[in-house]
Image (cartoon, rainbow, N blue to C red; front, side, top):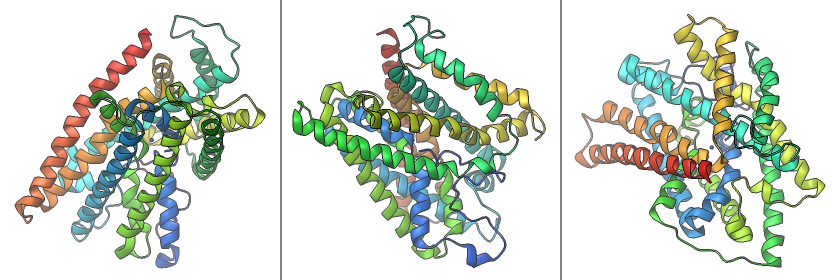
Length: 422
Protein backbone atom coordinates (compact mmCIF):
# COMPACT_ATOMS: atom_id res chain seq x y z
CA UNK A 1 0.00 0.00 0.00
CA UNK A 2 2.96 3.11 0.51
CA UNK A 3 6.38 4.01 -0.80
CA UNK A 4 8.28 4.83 2.37
CA UNK A 5 6.29 2.24 4.30
CA UNK A 6 7.44 -0.87 2.57
CA UNK A 7 11.11 -0.71 3.47
CA UNK A 8 10.45 -2.18 6.88
CA UNK A 9 12.75 -5.16 7.23
CA UNK A 10 12.34 -7.10 10.42
CA UNK A 11 16.06 -7.10 11.05
CA UNK A 12 17.60 -4.50 8.76
CA UNK A 13 20.21 -2.22 10.26
CA UNK A 14 21.76 -1.07 6.97
CA UNK A 15 19.02 1.19 5.72
CA UNK A 16 16.98 3.82 7.46
CA UNK A 17 13.64 3.39 5.69
CA UNK A 18 12.16 6.62 6.99
CA UNK A 19 14.73 9.36 6.48
CA UNK A 20 13.12 11.63 9.07
CA UNK A 21 13.95 9.07 11.74
CA UNK A 22 17.22 9.70 13.61
CA UNK A 23 19.51 6.75 14.21
CA UNK A 24 19.82 5.23 17.66
CA UNK A 25 22.69 6.24 19.81
CA UNK A 26 24.64 9.42 20.15
CA UNK A 27 22.93 12.21 21.97
CA UNK A 28 20.03 10.13 23.17
CA UNK A 29 17.00 12.22 23.91
CA UNK A 30 18.32 15.10 21.82
CA UNK A 31 17.75 13.04 18.69
CA UNK A 32 14.30 11.71 19.53
CA UNK A 33 11.29 12.72 17.45
CA UNK A 34 8.82 15.35 18.58
CA UNK A 35 5.09 14.72 18.15
CA UNK A 36 4.85 16.65 14.84
CA UNK A 37 7.86 14.75 13.54
CA UNK A 38 6.35 11.44 14.65
CA UNK A 39 3.11 12.42 12.89
CA UNK A 40 5.11 13.10 9.71
CA UNK A 41 7.04 9.84 10.05
CA UNK A 42 3.81 7.85 10.32
CA UNK A 43 2.52 9.61 7.21
CA UNK A 44 5.70 8.74 5.29
CA UNK A 45 5.59 5.14 6.55
CA UNK A 46 2.00 4.53 5.42
CA UNK A 47 1.12 6.70 2.41
CA UNK A 48 2.27 5.35 -0.95
CA UNK A 49 1.39 4.41 -4.50
CA UNK A 50 -1.48 2.18 -3.34
CA UNK A 51 -3.61 5.31 -2.96
CA UNK A 52 -3.78 5.56 -6.76
CA UNK A 53 -5.82 2.36 -6.89
CA UNK A 54 -8.47 3.52 -4.42
CA UNK A 55 -10.85 5.20 -6.92
CA UNK A 56 -11.06 1.97 -8.94
CA UNK A 57 -11.69 0.08 -5.71
CA UNK A 58 -14.55 2.45 -4.91
CA UNK A 59 -15.97 1.75 -8.36
CA UNK A 60 -16.21 -1.90 -7.27
CA UNK A 61 -17.39 -1.47 -3.68
CA UNK A 62 -19.45 1.71 -4.03
CA UNK A 63 -18.52 5.07 -2.58
CA UNK A 64 -20.19 4.55 0.83
CA UNK A 65 -18.92 0.98 1.35
CA UNK A 66 -15.42 2.00 0.27
CA UNK A 67 -15.36 4.86 2.76
CA UNK A 68 -16.57 2.64 5.59
CA UNK A 69 -13.99 -0.02 4.73
CA UNK A 70 -11.14 2.49 4.75
CA UNK A 71 -12.12 3.88 8.15
CA UNK A 72 -12.59 0.37 9.59
CA UNK A 73 -9.27 -0.92 8.28
CA UNK A 74 -7.51 2.22 9.56
CA UNK A 75 -8.95 1.67 13.05
CA UNK A 76 -8.07 -2.03 13.06
CA UNK A 77 -4.55 -1.35 11.78
CA UNK A 78 -4.03 1.26 14.50
CA UNK A 79 -5.27 -1.20 17.13
CA UNK A 80 -2.87 -3.92 15.93
CA UNK A 81 0.02 -1.46 15.87
CA UNK A 82 -0.65 -0.63 19.49
CA UNK A 83 -0.74 -4.35 20.33
CA UNK A 84 2.86 -4.59 19.12
CA UNK A 85 3.84 -1.53 21.15
CA UNK A 86 2.23 -3.04 24.26
CA UNK A 87 4.11 -6.32 23.72
CA UNK A 88 7.45 -4.56 23.32
CA UNK A 89 6.90 -2.49 26.46
CA UNK A 90 5.97 -5.57 28.50
CA UNK A 91 9.06 -7.47 27.35
CA UNK A 92 11.46 -4.51 27.63
CA UNK A 93 13.12 -5.68 30.88
CA UNK A 94 13.70 -9.24 29.67
CA UNK A 95 14.48 -8.29 26.05
CA UNK A 96 15.82 -4.70 26.05
CA UNK A 97 17.03 -4.81 22.42
CA UNK A 98 13.68 -5.29 20.65
CA UNK A 99 13.97 -2.76 17.84
CA UNK A 100 11.80 -4.27 15.12
CA UNK A 101 8.85 -6.51 14.34
CA UNK A 102 11.20 -9.45 13.72
CA UNK A 103 12.99 -8.88 17.04
CA UNK A 104 9.60 -9.00 18.78
CA UNK A 105 8.72 -12.22 16.95
CA UNK A 106 11.98 -13.75 18.14
CA UNK A 107 11.33 -12.62 21.72
CA UNK A 108 7.80 -14.03 21.76
CA UNK A 109 8.10 -17.26 19.73
CA UNK A 110 11.89 -17.48 19.29
CA UNK A 111 13.11 -18.69 15.89
CA UNK A 112 9.70 -19.53 14.41
CA UNK A 113 8.40 -16.08 15.35
CA UNK A 114 11.21 -14.29 13.54
CA UNK A 115 10.87 -16.65 10.57
CA UNK A 116 7.14 -15.92 10.31
CA UNK A 117 7.71 -12.15 10.36
CA UNK A 118 10.66 -12.34 7.96
CA UNK A 119 8.67 -14.50 5.53
CA UNK A 120 5.68 -12.16 5.52
CA UNK A 121 7.85 -9.06 5.18
CA UNK A 122 9.86 -10.55 2.31
CA UNK A 123 6.68 -11.55 0.49
CA UNK A 124 5.13 -8.13 1.05
CA UNK A 125 8.28 -6.26 -0.01
CA UNK A 126 8.66 -8.30 -3.19
CA UNK A 127 4.94 -7.93 -3.92
CA UNK A 128 5.14 -4.16 -3.52
CA UNK A 129 7.92 -4.11 -6.11
CA UNK A 130 5.81 -6.22 -8.47
CA UNK A 131 3.13 -3.56 -8.05
CA UNK A 132 5.69 -0.85 -8.85
CA UNK A 133 6.63 -2.51 -12.14
CA UNK A 134 2.96 -3.03 -13.04
CA UNK A 135 2.27 0.65 -12.37
CA UNK A 136 5.29 1.90 -14.34
CA UNK A 137 4.78 -0.40 -17.33
CA UNK A 138 1.02 0.18 -17.60
CA UNK A 139 1.50 3.93 -17.29
CA UNK A 140 4.26 4.01 -19.91
CA UNK A 141 2.20 1.85 -22.28
CA UNK A 142 -0.69 4.29 -21.81
CA UNK A 143 1.47 7.39 -22.39
CA UNK A 144 3.54 5.94 -25.22
CA UNK A 145 1.57 3.32 -27.20
CA UNK A 146 4.54 2.45 -29.44
CA UNK A 147 4.30 -1.34 -29.19
CA UNK A 148 1.73 -3.50 -30.92
CA UNK A 149 -0.63 -5.51 -28.68
CA UNK A 150 0.25 -9.17 -28.16
CA UNK A 151 -1.55 -12.14 -26.65
CA UNK A 152 1.80 -13.36 -25.28
CA UNK A 153 2.22 -12.00 -21.74
CA UNK A 154 6.00 -11.85 -22.23
CA UNK A 155 5.68 -9.75 -25.39
CA UNK A 156 2.81 -7.42 -24.51
CA UNK A 157 3.47 -3.65 -24.49
CA UNK A 158 3.58 -3.74 -20.69
CA UNK A 159 6.07 -6.62 -20.73
CA UNK A 160 8.32 -4.90 -23.27
CA UNK A 161 8.59 -1.86 -21.04
CA UNK A 162 9.49 -4.16 -18.12
CA UNK A 163 12.16 -5.90 -20.24
CA UNK A 164 13.57 -2.47 -21.06
CA UNK A 165 13.76 -1.56 -17.35
CA UNK A 166 15.33 -4.80 -16.14
CA UNK A 167 18.98 -4.12 -17.13
CA UNK A 168 18.91 -0.83 -15.23
CA UNK A 169 17.20 -2.44 -12.24
CA UNK A 170 19.78 -5.22 -12.18
CA UNK A 171 22.50 -2.59 -11.95
CA UNK A 172 20.75 -0.55 -9.25
CA UNK A 173 19.92 -3.65 -7.22
CA UNK A 174 23.55 -4.80 -7.33
CA UNK A 175 24.58 -1.90 -5.08
CA UNK A 176 25.48 -3.32 -1.67
CA UNK A 177 24.09 -0.51 0.48
CA UNK A 178 21.41 1.92 -0.62
CA UNK A 179 21.39 4.43 2.21
CA UNK A 180 21.89 7.29 -0.25
CA UNK A 181 18.64 6.33 -1.97
CA UNK A 182 16.61 6.35 1.25
CA UNK A 183 15.70 10.09 0.97
CA UNK A 184 13.65 9.10 -2.08
CA UNK A 185 10.92 8.01 0.33
CA UNK A 186 10.39 11.69 1.22
CA UNK A 187 10.44 12.65 -2.46
CA UNK A 188 8.01 9.78 -3.08
CA UNK A 189 5.44 11.25 -0.72
CA UNK A 190 5.87 14.72 -2.21
CA UNK A 191 5.22 13.29 -5.68
CA UNK A 192 2.27 11.27 -4.38
CA UNK A 193 0.71 14.34 -2.78
CA UNK A 194 1.26 16.33 -5.96
CA UNK A 195 -0.37 13.59 -8.02
CA UNK A 196 -3.30 13.44 -5.60
CA UNK A 197 -3.75 17.20 -5.86
CA UNK A 198 -3.78 17.11 -9.66
CA UNK A 199 -6.18 14.16 -9.71
CA UNK A 200 -8.56 15.79 -7.22
CA UNK A 201 -8.60 18.96 -9.31
CA UNK A 202 -9.39 16.94 -12.43
CA UNK A 203 -12.05 14.98 -10.50
CA UNK A 204 -13.87 18.16 -9.53
CA UNK A 205 -13.81 19.62 -13.05
CA UNK A 206 -15.00 16.37 -14.65
CA UNK A 207 -17.77 15.90 -12.08
CA UNK A 208 -19.01 19.47 -12.46
CA UNK A 209 -19.08 19.09 -16.25
CA UNK A 210 -21.02 15.80 -16.33
CA UNK A 211 -21.72 13.82 -13.14
CA UNK A 212 -21.82 10.08 -13.97
CA UNK A 213 -24.18 7.59 -12.24
CA UNK A 214 -22.62 5.97 -9.15
CA UNK A 215 -23.73 3.49 -6.48
CA UNK A 216 -23.13 3.34 -2.74
CA UNK A 217 -22.79 -0.38 -1.94
CA UNK A 218 -21.49 -3.36 -3.92
CA UNK A 219 -21.75 -7.12 -3.38
CA UNK A 220 -19.86 -9.37 -0.96
CA UNK A 221 -17.04 -10.20 -3.38
CA UNK A 222 -16.54 -6.47 -3.99
CA UNK A 223 -16.37 -5.88 -0.22
CA UNK A 224 -13.65 -8.54 0.15
CA UNK A 225 -11.83 -6.95 -2.78
CA UNK A 226 -12.07 -3.55 -1.09
CA UNK A 227 -10.76 -4.92 2.20
CA UNK A 228 -7.68 -6.28 0.43
CA UNK A 229 -6.86 -2.97 -1.23
CA UNK A 230 -7.55 -1.04 1.99
CA UNK A 231 -5.24 -3.28 4.02
CA UNK A 232 -2.56 -2.81 1.37
CA UNK A 233 -3.01 0.97 1.45
CA UNK A 234 -2.48 1.08 5.24
CA UNK A 235 0.38 -1.44 5.37
CA UNK A 236 3.12 0.01 7.53
CA UNK A 237 3.05 -2.11 10.65
CA UNK A 238 6.69 -3.08 10.23
CA UNK A 239 7.66 0.51 11.05
CA UNK A 240 5.63 1.03 14.23
CA UNK A 241 8.24 -0.24 16.71
CA UNK A 242 11.10 1.88 15.28
CA UNK A 243 8.74 4.86 15.23
CA UNK A 244 7.74 4.34 18.87
CA UNK A 245 11.37 3.86 19.92
CA UNK A 246 12.29 7.22 18.36
CA UNK A 247 9.35 9.15 19.88
CA UNK A 248 10.42 11.66 22.52
CA UNK A 249 7.09 11.48 24.37
CA UNK A 250 6.22 7.78 24.40
CA UNK A 251 3.14 8.32 26.57
CA UNK A 252 1.56 10.34 23.76
CA UNK A 253 2.78 8.09 20.94
CA UNK A 254 -0.57 6.30 20.73
CA UNK A 255 -2.43 9.60 20.41
CA UNK A 256 -0.06 10.85 17.71
CA UNK A 257 -0.27 7.55 15.83
CA UNK A 258 -4.07 7.59 16.03
CA UNK A 259 -4.33 11.17 14.76
CA UNK A 260 -2.01 10.42 11.86
CA UNK A 261 -3.90 7.26 10.90
CA UNK A 262 -7.21 9.13 11.13
CA UNK A 263 -5.90 11.93 8.91
CA UNK A 264 -4.65 9.41 6.33
CA UNK A 265 -7.99 7.56 6.39
CA UNK A 266 -9.95 10.75 5.70
CA UNK A 267 -7.52 11.73 2.93
CA UNK A 268 -7.77 8.26 1.37
CA UNK A 269 -11.56 8.30 1.58
CA UNK A 270 -11.82 11.71 -0.08
CA UNK A 271 -9.42 10.72 -2.85
CA UNK A 272 -11.12 7.38 -3.54
CA UNK A 273 -14.65 8.71 -3.44
CA UNK A 274 -13.95 11.77 -5.58
CA UNK A 275 -12.15 9.70 -8.20
CA UNK A 276 -15.06 7.31 -8.51
CA UNK A 277 -17.76 10.01 -8.36
CA UNK A 278 -15.99 11.89 -11.16
CA UNK A 279 -15.47 9.01 -13.61
CA UNK A 280 -18.05 6.40 -12.53
CA UNK A 281 -17.79 3.08 -14.34
CA UNK A 282 -14.99 4.50 -16.51
CA UNK A 283 -12.62 4.68 -13.51
CA UNK A 284 -9.41 2.85 -14.39
CA UNK A 285 -7.23 0.69 -12.17
CA UNK A 286 -4.60 3.48 -12.06
CA UNK A 287 -6.53 6.71 -11.62
CA UNK A 288 -3.82 8.87 -13.22
CA UNK A 289 -4.58 7.20 -16.57
CA UNK A 290 -8.04 8.81 -16.37
CA UNK A 291 -6.41 12.22 -16.64
CA UNK A 292 -6.41 14.15 -19.87
CA UNK A 293 -3.56 14.35 -22.36
CA UNK A 294 -2.11 17.69 -21.29
CA UNK A 295 1.45 18.34 -20.20
CA UNK A 296 0.53 18.44 -16.50
CA UNK A 297 -1.05 14.99 -16.65
CA UNK A 298 1.96 13.55 -18.47
CA UNK A 299 4.38 15.22 -16.04
CA UNK A 300 2.56 13.77 -13.01
CA UNK A 301 2.52 10.27 -14.47
CA UNK A 302 6.17 10.39 -15.53
CA UNK A 303 7.15 11.76 -12.13
CA UNK A 304 5.43 8.84 -10.41
CA UNK A 305 7.13 6.36 -12.75
CA UNK A 306 10.61 7.83 -12.18
CA UNK A 307 9.97 7.92 -8.44
CA UNK A 308 8.93 4.24 -8.29
CA UNK A 309 11.77 3.19 -10.60
CA UNK A 310 14.42 4.51 -8.21
CA UNK A 311 12.50 3.48 -5.09
CA UNK A 312 12.31 -0.18 -6.10
CA UNK A 313 15.96 -1.00 -5.12
CA UNK A 314 15.35 0.49 -1.68
CA UNK A 315 12.21 -1.61 -1.22
CA UNK A 316 14.01 -4.79 -2.37
CA UNK A 317 16.83 -4.32 0.13
CA UNK A 318 15.12 -6.17 3.03
CA UNK A 319 14.41 -9.07 0.65
CA UNK A 320 18.11 -9.33 -0.15
CA UNK A 321 19.04 -9.12 3.50
CA UNK A 322 16.86 -12.08 4.45
CA UNK A 323 17.70 -14.09 1.30
CA UNK A 324 21.44 -13.62 1.72
CA UNK A 325 21.22 -14.46 5.42
CA UNK A 326 19.34 -17.70 4.75
CA UNK A 327 20.94 -18.80 1.48
CA UNK A 328 24.44 -17.27 1.35
CA UNK A 329 25.75 -17.06 4.91
CA UNK A 330 24.91 -13.35 5.33
CA UNK A 331 27.30 -12.51 2.46
CA UNK A 332 26.58 -10.23 -0.49
CA UNK A 333 25.48 -12.26 -3.54
CA UNK A 334 24.88 -10.43 -6.82
CA UNK A 335 23.48 -13.41 -8.72
CA UNK A 336 20.90 -14.10 -5.99
CA UNK A 337 19.78 -10.48 -6.22
CA UNK A 338 19.53 -10.73 -10.00
CA UNK A 339 17.40 -13.87 -9.75
CA UNK A 340 15.04 -12.11 -7.34
CA UNK A 341 14.76 -9.05 -9.62
CA UNK A 342 14.00 -11.31 -12.60
CA UNK A 343 11.36 -13.16 -10.57
CA UNK A 344 9.71 -9.87 -9.63
CA UNK A 345 9.80 -8.69 -13.24
CA UNK A 346 8.30 -11.90 -14.63
CA UNK A 347 5.56 -11.81 -12.00
CA UNK A 348 4.66 -8.27 -13.03
CA UNK A 349 4.35 -9.31 -16.68
CA UNK A 350 1.69 -11.89 -15.89
CA UNK A 351 -0.52 -9.68 -13.69
CA UNK A 352 -2.84 -7.60 -15.89
CA UNK A 353 -4.37 -5.15 -13.42
CA UNK A 354 -2.61 -2.94 -10.85
CA UNK A 355 -5.45 -2.71 -8.34
CA UNK A 356 -6.34 -6.41 -8.66
CA UNK A 357 -2.80 -7.18 -7.58
CA UNK A 358 -3.05 -4.75 -4.64
CA UNK A 359 -6.17 -6.60 -3.51
CA UNK A 360 -4.35 -9.95 -3.70
CA UNK A 361 -1.34 -8.76 -1.70
CA UNK A 362 -3.51 -6.99 0.85
CA UNK A 363 -5.83 -9.99 1.29
CA UNK A 364 -3.03 -12.50 1.70
CA UNK A 365 0.30 -11.26 3.02
CA UNK A 366 -0.71 -7.91 4.52
CA UNK A 367 -3.67 -9.33 6.44
CA UNK A 368 -1.44 -11.95 8.06
CA UNK A 369 1.30 -9.43 8.79
CA UNK A 370 -0.98 -6.64 9.98
CA UNK A 371 -3.68 -8.49 11.91
CA UNK A 372 -2.91 -12.16 12.60
CA UNK A 373 0.69 -11.88 13.84
CA UNK A 374 0.13 -8.87 16.17
CA UNK A 375 -2.91 -10.51 17.77
CA UNK A 376 -1.02 -13.81 18.14
CA UNK A 377 1.96 -12.09 19.76
CA UNK A 378 -0.31 -10.15 22.13
CA UNK A 379 -2.20 -13.31 23.11
CA UNK A 380 1.08 -15.08 23.87
CA UNK A 381 2.53 -12.21 25.93
CA UNK A 382 -0.60 -11.17 27.87
CA UNK A 383 -2.83 -14.26 27.63
CA UNK A 384 -2.16 -15.52 31.17
CA UNK A 385 -3.22 -12.25 32.80
CA UNK A 386 -6.03 -11.06 30.52
CA UNK A 387 -9.69 -11.47 31.32
CA UNK A 388 -11.81 -13.53 28.95
CA UNK A 389 -12.97 -10.50 26.89
CA UNK A 390 -9.34 -9.63 26.18
CA UNK A 391 -8.47 -13.19 25.21
CA UNK A 392 -11.61 -13.39 23.09
CA UNK A 393 -10.76 -10.18 21.24
CA UNK A 394 -7.30 -11.50 20.29
CA UNK A 395 -8.71 -14.87 19.23
CA UNK A 396 -11.45 -13.23 17.17
CA UNK A 397 -8.89 -10.95 15.51
CA UNK A 398 -6.78 -13.97 14.54
CA UNK A 399 -9.84 -15.79 13.19
CA UNK A 400 -11.00 -12.66 11.32
CA UNK A 401 -7.58 -12.23 9.77
CA UNK A 402 -7.37 -15.87 8.69
CA UNK A 403 -10.90 -15.75 7.24
CA UNK A 404 -10.14 -12.56 5.31
CA UNK A 405 -6.90 -14.09 4.06
CA UNK A 406 -8.64 -17.21 2.74
CA UNK A 407 -11.75 -15.66 1.19
CA UNK A 408 -10.08 -12.40 0.13
CA UNK A 409 -7.23 -14.23 -1.59
CA UNK A 410 -9.72 -16.50 -3.36
CA UNK A 411 -11.84 -13.63 -4.70
CA UNK A 412 -8.74 -11.63 -5.69
CA UNK A 413 -7.31 -14.57 -7.63
CA UNK A 414 -10.65 -15.04 -9.39
CA UNK A 415 -10.61 -11.38 -10.40
CA UNK A 416 -7.04 -11.62 -11.70
CA UNK A 417 -7.80 -14.73 -13.74
CA UNK A 418 -10.95 -13.08 -15.07
CA UNK A 419 -8.95 -10.00 -16.10
CA UNK A 420 -6.32 -12.21 -17.75
CA UNK A 421 -8.91 -14.05 -19.86
CA UNK A 422 -10.85 -10.91 -20.77
